[in-house]
Length: 549
Image (cartoon, rainbow, N blue to C red; front, side, top):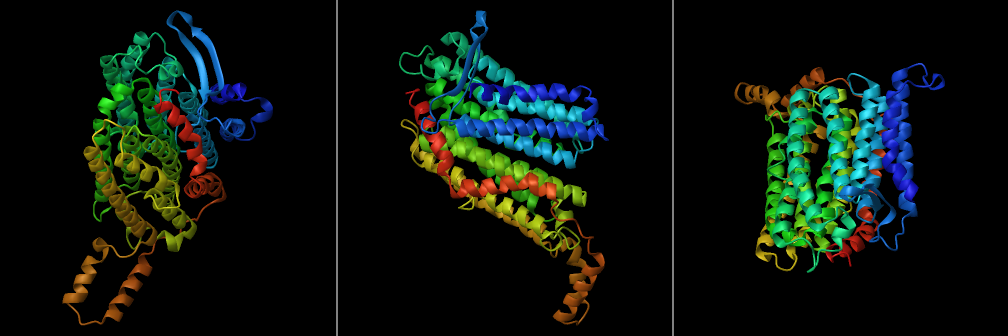
């Protein structure tokens, strides 16, 4: 188990180095570009197999105990150790990261985004995977920061070199926001380590009682500094503005990994560091975190509604990016309740968001490849997508992703949001219940708004149909200037639509089935069998909130 966890973290780095080296003569093949893409699929596949083996070998009877641990001295003078381990909180995120990266590599093998070099693309993808996996596996504050920062450079280049319109602006905005947040977070991590005398996250989590080395003031400063850095990555309103630009400009696989994995690093940091290490400081700031989360839920939904309306020229990819602000708001709200119910809901919502939003970004990227645009007004008219008629399997899968995202019971999106609101209904002792009931009500309003904009998207994109911008002139002429019957007007519209019908588009290809089906299947399984995930997280959360006991 120790070797497996070490391999999961190290293999992507070795694979990235190997991707940049000349291929051996027997492995070059006819196309060197395809050879290196095949290398990416192989390495990520091996990492996924190792992660699944970790999950199978994990002691499910004791998920609160750190397992597969490695603890060796690294920088002895500073007390920094190479400390790795997984428990019921980190294991699902580790497997999710390995799965999404493998699916991205598989999709890219058949559909590489336009950019400079396949070698560089694969190497950056593997470095990104290594950083995210390490973030969920390390148990030392300094190593956590290094892994946390390790993902920034590869994501910057994926956006800046393989992205779409305004990619340079979006990449710089992404790197500046996250770097500035990380600088503040580093100060908080150093404060905790120097005041407590250790950077070991396990030791700090079990020493947060009355005899803790961290005073109330130190905990306040630590949570404020660490929380700002984590909130930027989460992303929490109003520190979210980098996210829509980054998602809109990023290539498809960049958007999938950004939404499915990178956002989880911020919320994971709140659960792994802020809650157990500085509980007093977290208790003080919890109402403010919950308030920002609740506002983010409503704000994200209203922004999506504005983008979905007719004539707004809303970008479907940008809309899903704003939906992430709302969905991650539920995660932050659950964490802010500081209750087992709320934190379990937050962790469940993390996984559900990774599965569902990852699937949606895959679908929207493929939609752009087919139509050349993600502009809703262009997709939704009589000459637009109407996916149910033109590509029924594609349209059905897009509708499934939207329905899952709005939190339909029986699918993964439901449980996390419900448990987060249950946690807000009865927050931890000492927190203002009237305030959290208000936040719960705002979150409930957000669920209604989410259902509204996602159903509008499904109706417009999957069903197509009449759009006022296209039919308004003809409609007015028929009403004011003629005596024709309704049947005649309908026939006229049908004939006009037939002459302007967009060409047929290809339905789902085999590689798209292979890359997207696992996400759809897991969304259903997590929705129908939530105990599989909650059984892992709940004992670990109970111990974490109980001071490591």
